[in-house]
Structure formats: C-alpha cells, structure tokens
Length: 225
Image (cartoon, rainbow, N blue to C red):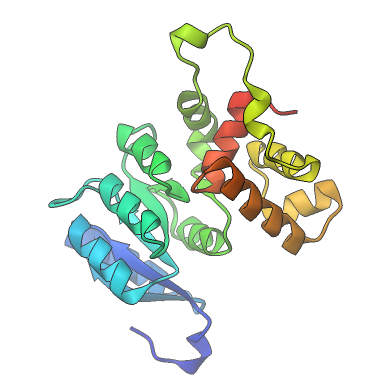
C-alpha cells in the first residue's frame, strides 16, 4: 500500500480474487500505475463485501467465481450498499455469471486474459463513472442480455418506460446504447461533458437502473435511434 502524497487522488481499488497467484498478479499490475492504489485484497466474496464497506474504495475488481459468497451476490451487496463501483473479472466471455453481475449493478466486466494496459484503462474508465464491457464480447453480450422472450418476439418495444425522461435524457440514453463515453456523447450532442454526466445520473435514477451498462442494454432493447 503506497502512502506517497502524490497518490492522494489515485483511484482506490479493492482486489477480490480467490486464487492467490492471480490476485498477486492483479495487485502488481495495478500497483505499477501512479494513479491507481490497491487499498485491500479479498480472497472470497464475504471478505470482499466486508472490506468494501470498511475501506470504501472507488472500485472493487471482482472475480465472479469465489468461495463463501459468489461474485454476483457480492457485487449486489456492494452496489446496493453504495460501497463502491464493481468491475467484474471472468474467464469466459459469455459466462452466465456475467449476466447476473450486470443485473446486480456491476459497472462492467473484463476477461481475465485482458492485457495489463487495458486492465489499467478499464479501472480508470469505471472510476470516471463510465461503464465498460470487454470490447471482444460487447455485441454478443448486449444481444443476449436484451434478447426478447418468445412471448414478445414480434411485439414492438414499449417506449412508455421512457416517459419520465426529458428529450435530452432520451438522446443521452440512445448514445449510451451505442457504447459512447461521456466525452464522446458530449461531442455528438454538443454539450459539456459535466452536463452529460448529470443527464446520465438522472436518467439512471428515473429508470431505476444501477449502471450505465444496464442503460445501454435498455437502449438497445428499445431500439433507440
């Protein structure tokens, strides 16, 4: 744990991974970045929730398959408690655990074979309040997550769920569905990035969603232009 004053504004990360060798590797990678600080390590889901509540990190890097309490349940408790954002790590790109984790409010997920530089950038991205899904599986994940059931296969999407949103919030939601970052949305819609962040926060609250990833899936499901 680094106490260098230059890292006072660093992204504070809790690493939750049951395999000690993998956890050590993640800690080593994260610790190599001057703007990221590992504030704790957890070897199981229960410890992850306890440390998240105690340490209040900016982000929990959460493995989905852990003893005592699985990563999906741990993610749900961390998010519902408001302890931190959660970035899920998984071995498989379409692991059923991933869908559960996103529904539980995870800010996104990465594959365990992600390059070190991409892991660091993912942590920074989620810490900025932007969701992230591993690029290699984004399309398949959204398609699976938003796939309509047989009973409503031919039904038109129910756009009434968007009634609480302002016109601008709907536009921002549509851009989230394209997978754009706050900065990219700001350029596309000609508004300040801070304003985009405010719109995202408000639309999540109005729609009862826990993350911008869930918002992106909803936008895809509704076929927003």
